[in-house]
Image 1 (tube, rainbow, N blue to C red):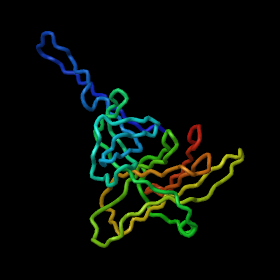
Image 2: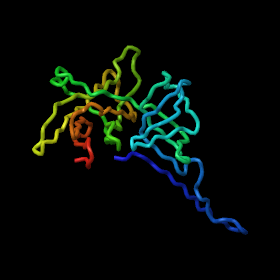
Image 3: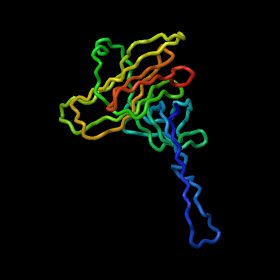
Image 4: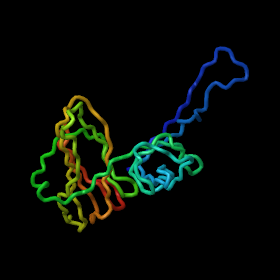
Length: 226
């Protein structure tokens, strides 16, 4: 599923009295061709993002290296969402935010006790390059005491099923603990789970939400989600 956004602004300005003036603006300002993509962000020796590889497989150098307070390590790669303008094959960064990554765990004890606290689920999709499962979540939160237990999230391996056509489907259970965090207001967050090393043709995701249990199957090889 392609996860990108294009914003086009066309402002029509009616002129009461005008000589040799256009009746509209073309909308080619800073944000007119903005895109948003999930990506792997490469950080250089100066702790700045200098290149991104989007989930659609586009390898884009940045027009200007991007610095951010969340970058703690040089010469590494972070999972991120980038808002940018595509300028002649380069990304002109408008903002880059880090995205948390969650590893799929094989934990039989945790699986047997799986009874997660609910979350809000806005969206879930597998990136076009099939490298990540992405989640758009809404967590209920509020002010906590200093020693309060925070939110925790994870992914549990629920087993692998061999289907009638010999394809394999891995079951993934989203695990959330509210901790001591009160549920006063909502906070939108993103999370990504790496798919490398998963030996299956499809993935069946289960998330317990405030509206009930969400289950959907996503293709991990060429083909449409089920």
